Length: 68
Image 1 (cartoon, rainbow, N blue to C red):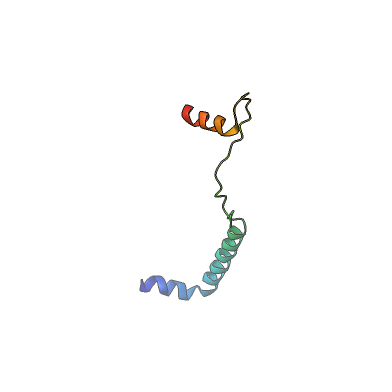
Image 2: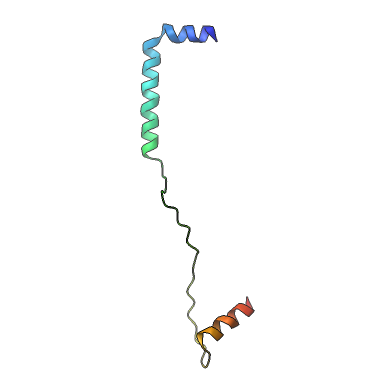
């Protein structure tokens, strides 16, 4: 570990340049990060249109529930 720190201290300009390059790449990646601040949490809904002569809407819906 001491040798590693010694190499870092000997090449300060190279290490500073590496930090600047990595920070720039991180900022560029952060700008392109697709984050949805408000996710869609609504239920999926499907509209079914059907004809049922002589039946009320409630009767048609109750009949559908017994089939499924």
